[in-house]
Image (cartoon, rainbow, N blue to C red; front, side, top):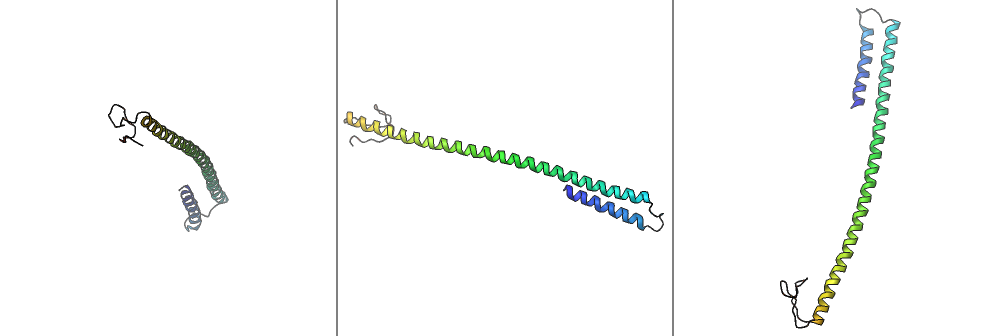
Amino acid sequence: MKRLSISIILVFGVAMFALSGCAGNEKPATTADIMRGHAADVQTEVNLKEDLARQWEQGSELSQAGRERIRDGQEMIQEGQSQINQGKREMAQGTQLMQDSERRFRQNFPGLQLRPGGGAGATTGETSSTD
């Protein structure tokens, strides 16, 4: 967007300079007028270079921010994966502990049933009295 506006200013300046020299009723351009025209061209070029330098700095800052965001995201993914793995291990251990507990209960108390809401309390809802 800035490039376009600078280009438009440059074209407009050059056109004005050219038209001022082509006007028949106007007095001919003096050396001072030509010097001012060159100065305007140089100033436009300076402005363009400054705008390009500012854009480069903004791009550099954005790139750095993007790299940091990617690094932070990757760390979050690794932490999340670690928590998922820990959760899976805990689920497996918990399920194994529940199954072992029910098996040992049935071995020690073969006449009692495990059922939800019953006196023995159940963890899986199974209602088998034998293995």
